[in-house]
Amino acid sequence: MTITHLVTHSGGFHADELLSSAVLTRVFPQAELLRSRDRKWITPATDKIIYDVGGDYDGEAQIFDHHQRPSPLRDDGQPFSSFGLIWAHYGRAYLAAMDVPTDDIEAIHTKFDTKFVLPIDLLDNGAIEPSVAGPLSILTLPALLGSLKPVFDDMSPTADDDAFFAALPIARSFVEAQIRGLAAKARASGIVLNAIAQAGTSPILELPMGMPYRAALDQMGSDHILFVVHPRGGDWTLGGIKLSQDTFEQRADLPAAWAGLTDAALEDASGVKGAKFCHNARFIAVAYTREAIMKMAEIAVREA
Image (tube, rainbow, N blue to C red; front, side):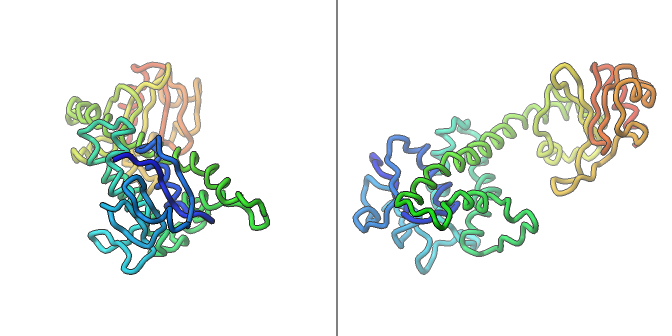
């Protein structure tokens, strides 16, 4: 099967078909992306993928609309948008095209669907209100992508298409960044798990570099670990561990006497030669050497 055309609707656009386009153009880079409501283009054929238009959902026929009744639903009853349908059918091929290791594809496909695709589906279908984001609602991805539409008095006959194709690389960059981040977390997992094993009962976790570590801590139930140490450039950092991703509260704060201090003042307050900086919020400190940062970590543990 050779796909020669990727077809979505003309006129105004939303996040779901933009993000679908980002996925499909990676999987089928030689295909032409066409925006049309012409019946000849939105009628299924073996060389076309049609999405967010056409009034039907049929994976075998390669048409992925969600506006018809009954609309397609996930197994749990939540609605699909075109993005969710495209991700369900072509997301794994997209991940392979992004060079995600085969062993990680299924897990990353599921995580991206849950964390990124589903919210787009729910917003597009009105299943959740933008107001759930509170004062940040205007900064959600659908809102930001929607802001790239042409203004109401742009009378250019190509205004909608021009805006869509200008917005597409922006949408693509968000999808790719998310996938790279999930792939990086998968790569980091083994490193962190090994470091946790080496730490044993110590409340200090030492990593070879800055990397995502929270998932591995949760996986291992390592509630005894209070601080993380790793090199950063020519320095070393000492960081606290947040209680969850939804709060700034930490398992333990760095000593109050260090808050906001640098260099000599921090050396005096901590008693550690080579201490360089401590954030006023006491979630990170920096030292010039590993020896100094480990001393600071030990002091922070004692005070915690």
